[in-house]
Image (cartoon, rainbow, N blue to C red; front, side):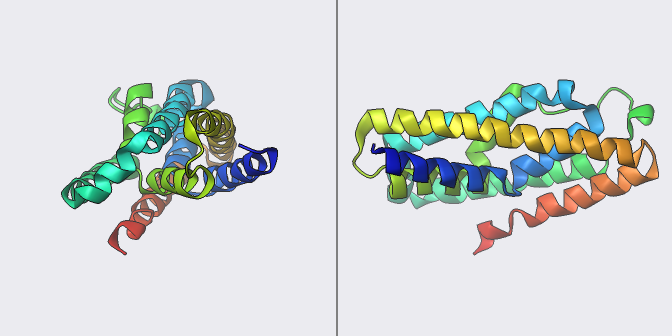
Length: 196
């Protein structure tokens, strides 16, 4: 991969990773509800889960889905169901002082697994592989994974930190509930691309 191609890929990684999407909205909500320290496993799961998705697509998974459209349909249905559950969970989250122990941030494994049904993540990975890596081989794929890993981790960290800053403005009562419902609505809207 040439330095110019690597720079273009890094710019694509930054723009696609920092813009709003399901991961970033959930991380901002997690930062606001649970603080940065408790959100770190969620952040790491997003970054490393996406890298793994990118590597799998680059190794040929995208072609498998093209050959078997039923798998694609199944992934979309699973994505919709999981996002509906996450949206409900976020909308009904109790403020920190009222929690009964069931509310918690996503774990590393939950966040990593979510990448497999995240429509924005799939779009990012497919675009990276088809537009920036066609025929470039394993070394280029590994370089792209490293670039995305670093850029994505810094981007999701930014959203989680923003959530902690919002928390100080919201307090722990009614305003935090309104924030959670707003984030849940935005999360639900993030699945609209699935129906195009």
